[in-house]
Image (cartoon, rainbow, N blue to C red):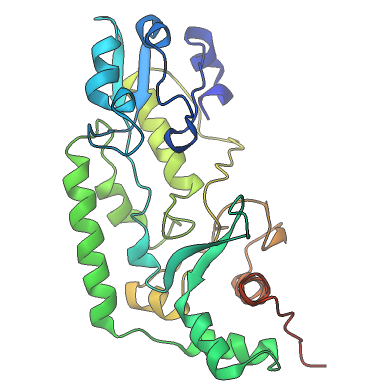
Length: 271
């Protein structure tokens, strides 16, 4: 995202490093850390499963005294309060590609309706399904307790923004990944900290994070969510190309593709 801003490019050169779960070496490199003027990172604990050399305790000790360290939010896994129906990742046989998150509502629909039902029956089931409100509330309390606890370690504070805006702006694309709108907000706050001028207008930014998944209609009703912005990418595996947001199409294609990916069944439309 920062590379889209001429002012940022004027002062800094971006040195990309692998995401922590893709860092095969288990380290960033002391030489890179030592030469950095700004280190933008998430809070990585000493006990992380990827290695001590990727923890803040190690990396921060290798920065120069002049280096500016900015801790950005780590929101992976914190969207579950909007997606109580999503569970584990469903992958292909050799686990090289994530297909979708297991959807308890559509799994229940499949058990009840089977492979010979029309997609219209599945869509009707999906729209009509309602979680007990205590389940949604408990998931909200659980996730938000963790978010606010973790936020104490972040330089970029984001919890208040999410609470204020989540009803009108998509904040997560699935249970595990923040939306491009939330990533933009975090990016703008970083630029503010660095005192870099920027314009939000006409910023064509796509984050390509996660697996874009619609929020269950009854969950949107519970929270009073009313946004009509596109959830995420203009093109994705599920939804093709979009020129505008159309929730009914979004959900029908999600239902179709989910059953196809999870159960190898091509649901038929009513003729």
